[in-house]
Every structure is written in structure tokens, then in C-alpha cells.
Image (cartoon, rainbow, N blue to C red; front, side):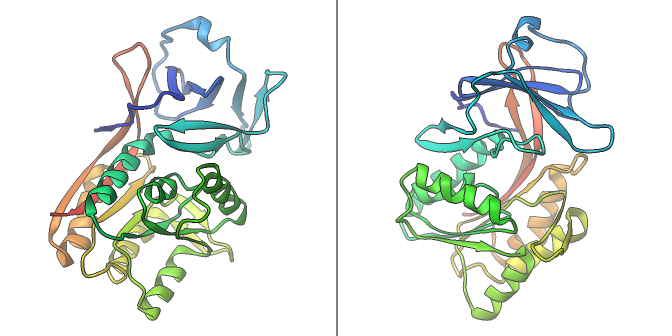
Length: 289
């Protein structure tokens, strides 16, 4: 398992009965997590200090119950030298997946040690955690997401780090269609980061279902890799989608064309003051040797 255990501004304080108690900077929230099937609180009093709780609706979705009187609309948290803007959103999220810090460390190390210009393609890039990590080490990034609102959030994160003058392209588009166009144009990248949802829709209603699309898209992406690729990352949040599946996909596609090293593991975040770790999906990595 790869652990995101270098956070200061984010912590999982406790877990119990389908919920996690988290600190985001100076604010504490309770959010649902289907993997928390145990019913044992480590510290009852901590739960009472939460500034807000996301409550699921029996009809689907849910809403925030905010108890804090002066909760700002958004605020910044830091991971090492990186800065991110977070805020409670309509679908339980806060604009950041903290477990991805394990991948940010990998991205930054690979780019820093490459000693050359690195072009990165970040598909399903969301609010730009991996994009900011890559930019911080001097890479150029093409950031692709289907949502205009999320793209604006990514831009805010880039500006929060002072990276607005660095080499970045913002593309609001369906991921598959964009990759197909890049192949026709002959554009190539040294690294690919792919963080697809389990289910989603493109800007024109295109349906994305992970298990139906992930293999074909990974195979397609081998045609946009440069002659000297550096790394390829695929994430999955689908429950029951084992790391071995990602290992197999990368081995059958990227590693078949470019001989390197494939590794796939769970991602996890330690729970404070306990021996426990909360699993947070899986990641597969291909890297050049």
C-alpha cells in the first residue's frame, strides 16, 4: 500500500459506522465513506467538535449540515510547498483527494530527476492536484476535464501557487475525444496521469463507465506517448477494482510497447492515534527504467 502520510494540514481524526472525521486546515468535517463498516469510535469528543457534516439523502445525493457560524466559502491548505483551495461542495467532496499526495510525491520526484523538459497529460484532472505537483517541478501540463466549473477551480489552484505563467493548457473536453484528436495531430507526451471516475458524463452527455472504458483508453493513450516516456499513472476509486486489475492493464498496454516497470497498490491514509489505515482506492504506475 502507498500511504499519504506526509500531511500536516489534513488528517483523518477518526472513523466509525460509515463516516470519517477529517481536519481540513483548521476546520473539521464528517463525511460518509462506504468502506468504513466498523462501529468503533476512537474519541467520542472529537466528533462533537465538527464544523459540518455531510448527510446522505435516501433519495440519492445529500446535503451539508454546517454548524460553524463563520465558515468561509473556501480556504487554503498546504501539502509541503503546494497550496490548494478547498470548500464543501454539493456532492460531499471538498475539491481535493488527500490520498493522491502519495502520487504527487512520485510525480514530483520523477520530473525532478528526469533532467529534461517533461510534457504531462493529466486526464480527468479535476481541480489540479497532480497538475500543480507537476508544474512545481517545471513540467508543462495539458489539463483535461469535462467540467467548466472544475476547470476554473483548477485555475484558482494554479494561481494560488503562483504558477500562472508556467506552461499549462486548460482543455474542457471529453477525455477520449481529446486523446483521439491529439493522436491525429501527432502531439505526444512524456507522462500521462489518468484519474477517471467510476461513472460520469462528458460535456456533451458522453457516458463514461470505468470498467467498460479503462482498458481501451489506456491502450489508446500509448499512441500519445513520446519516444522516451517517463511515467504513466492510472487511478481507480471503484470499490472492488483490485490493484491487480490496474497492473494487468498497464502490463498489457503501456509496458508491452515501452519496456519498464509496472507497480499497482492500494492507496491509504493513516487514521490519527490508531494503528488503522483507511483504504482510498487503487493506483497503477508504469515507469521507465
